[in-house]
Image (cartoon, rainbow, N blue to C red; front, top):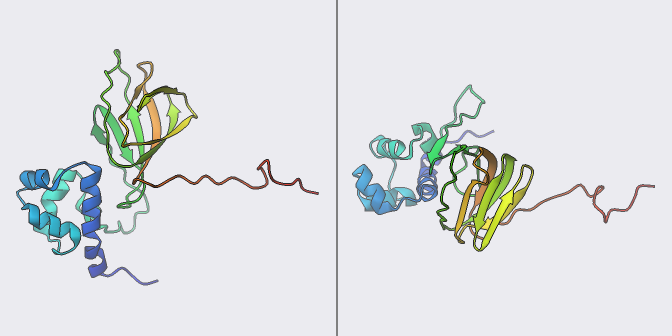
Length: 202
């Protein structure tokens, strides 16, 4: 098996940085103001026109709150475990379950119990989201719909519609989330032998 060269690792940094910034919903202008790195340099870095250096990557790693190894995609030699680092946003905890830049991102989401329910604050952004409730009762607002999902129930929705997730009864909620780019759809496969259309064995 061919080993990934240093050039290939560095060439992939730009796409990884762009995916991280878009996932965090940060503009290049905001990132430039926070890091002190010019907007044009950040743009060239993401497009692969500027070679990543330690001086450029260190402030980005601090802003994104990720290890430097994650920015460059360096393998953790000798340790096959996935090191999960929770992210806190909007009073909820997101545990990333995937490290692949771009494409579909997987998270475990934890909504803490609250004595009083939060006032819904619907948000919009590009993409498609799938979710599966593990524990608790989830309230899902998407467009004009106001749904309550119990453990074992799943939903799929377009995130360009105003949407909001919260606890339906004030209790804690745990769910799995897959977030993908606009136009991507989940493909569910079933065992053809269990399908109603399958012919019985003779």
